[in-house]
Amino acid sequence: MAQFLDQKMLTGFVREAQSYLPQLREGVTQFQQDATQREALDEALRYAHTIKGAAAMVCLPVLSHLAYYVEATLEEVVSGQRPLDAPCHAWVYHVTEQLEQYLEHLLAGEGEQRGLVADIVRTFRRFQGLPEAEDAAAIQAALGEELDLMPTPDESTAATPSEVAPAPAVRETPAPTEAAQESEFAIDLLWETVAEEAAALAALPEDSARTIDMAMVSQDMSALDLDKEETTEVLRPAAVTLDALVGSIDRDVHQVYSQGLVPQSPSRRLDSQNQTERYILFTLGESRYAVPVPHVVEIGRIPRITPVPNVPSWVRGVINLRGEILSVLDFRTFLGMEDMHHDEHSRMLVVKTPGDEVATSLIVDQIMGIVPLTTARLEIPATSNNKAAPYLTGAYEHEDQVCAVFDLERLLLSPEVRQFE
Amino acid sequence: MSTILVVDDSPTALKLVTKTLSTTGHHIITAGDGEEAVKKATAEHPDLMVLDVVMPHKNGYQVCRQLKTDAKTKDIKIILLTSKDQQADRFWGMKQGADAYLTKPFEEAELLSTIAKLL
Image (cartoon, rainbow over all chains, first blue to last red; front, side, top):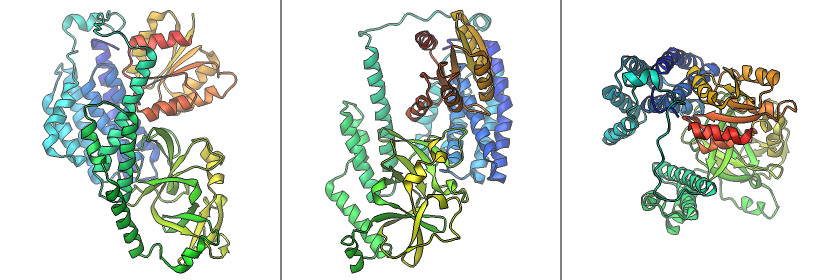
């Protein structure tokens, strides 16, 4: 990559970035005023992403880092993990105006701009609810990426990426083979993913889902079999005992029973003798739906989603679930229901049918429990969601409420879903 | 001499990649968004494309998928060059049929050697 900044290239980049920032703000405002303006939000995200990428290419890593803050925030909005409320809107406005100042100073030849960078880092951290105690380290980390690449008068006209001869590489150890490099790279990626997962889990309230997730993270780390210095530190939140796990599950089960979601009635215990199929019951809006248990691989909280651009809004993106990449479909949005950001009740159902090569993650509003559906099968209610109708196998009455059952095979193998999986 | 189509919506990025490739002696053509990329790829049938991902109208994934499923263009080698650097992004990119996936900021030597391998 370029080793020195070409003044002409720098000026071109600054003008380009300056043209994007007002449009970025405009897109965010349009979406805030009218949530159907999804394209405006996608466009705003694209501008943030382009500034981040181009800044990195012209050797402005600090600016790239700051643009990443905007991109990450808008990605959270796009993937439904954050509402675009007044504080979020105000923060995007504030930071993009500061980026405009940064660009102006850059053109004027003021390289580092410590005060401005520190202010952006601090406001981002307050907006994200991150502790003030770690601000100084975060600011240092942001500024630490700045390289001394501003052109000297001689370099500004002479040096170009292709003309700069690379410095001879100094190697103290034999060069690793390509395969070894790839393998090391893959392990590092896995390690980062698992460590991020452990840190995120540690911040969640303690319940059995968290405990089980932590046990899985712990298992993943053991499987990586790494001699990493930070192993102990990262594993600490993931360390669980069997007693803790059982105790945690007991508490959850007690809570579910005490709320009456899955009554322990004798008739329920007879269901298994009648070979009744069991279903995961969940809600989308006011409606209850169910999917057969054998098709559900896992239920969990919604992890960090990597948005995929220019796909329907119901494709939230992809996630890395312990090394497996899954598409994430927002069931609510897919069925044409009101687009809402996820809350603490939202869960993902990881589902896989016999006809599927890979699993798919479906976001639902709330999991109600595992239920056997034994009462008389009903006709699908006429008021049932029109978009859902082609994918339903029938409806059952459960706890005095109608519950529609999805045919997951029909849904996941449908051309509409298939093209984005 | 081969023809390489460079696609990026950022004029800065487009200029930098083009400048890097100018040393190779290949014929370089450019496009500024996904739709233009598909049109130029179909009309001019380059040997290789260096394709950005996040672009207006059609993103790089869509362009890649469209070209790789069309008998007339499926033999065009495609390098996705993007600042989307997560493992999931890489997976998604390769799933669209790309021949290589590189991230920005790119290493000049890595881009040139990847091109040399594919041509």
